Amino acid sequence: MTDEPDTDDTRRARLILGLRSQGVTDPNVLGALEQTPRDLFVPDLFLDRTWEDSALPIACGQTISQPFIVGLMTQALTLEPRSRVLEIGTGSGYQTAVLARLARYVYTVERYRTLMGEAEKRFKALDLTNIITRFGDGAEGWRDQAPFDRILVTAAAPGEPRELLSQLKPSGVLVAPVGRGPVQSLMRYAGDGKGDFKVETLCDVRFVPLLEGVAREL
Ligand code: SAH
Image (cartoon, rainbow, N blue to C red; front, side):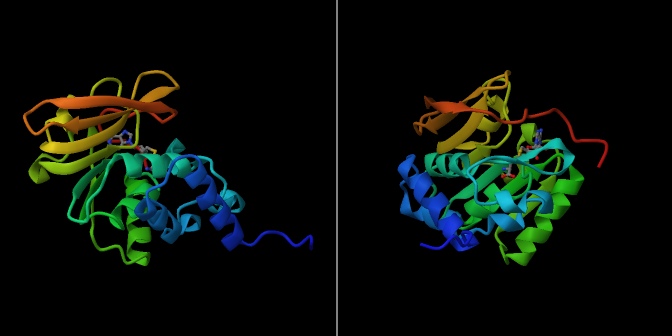
């Protein structure tokens, strides 16, 4: 035994194993997490915490999600290689990059120009060419590009996200944190193909709120 500190590779491998033991078992999802360098998305100040399973602060008072939650939400989406996905709340772009490895196209909307710009640079650096970005109010979805096969919301919606559900294909899946308090329910809406949804509550989560409109500052 030596007292040498763990390398990033060791920490990354340990994180992935931890996610698997907590229920992220889809090998494709685990593979996408393994291939996505989270250190590229974490602010310099928190680099030493990159491979911890925790949410971390990013610019504009927002957060990069906890890897377990990214894995869980991605798995709950049941993506297919041909899926066109809408993501609301680009943030650092980490979740977007994970989705981009599993889906055909990812359309992502962010209400802070700064965050959008930084995320775009990361997508370029990683050569992720199937991501289409937009600065705007994600609560409105992306009507010109609807309907989508899958929709993922990474900020807490106050109630059932009706507008977004209307932009989902009849057999599509939408995953979103729903609730007004500090703790929300992670909800999964699966279309039955006939205009109705099977609604499931997956677990409790803590997300920043989905805010109205675009941010004036930054
Ligand atoms: N998936 C992100 C987590 C981002 S936190 C990551 O892995 O880094 C949630 C993000 O949703 C924040 O960046 C916030 O600015 C954004 N957001 C909140 N309300 C929004 C809205 N109405 N439209 C678009 N983005 C919104």
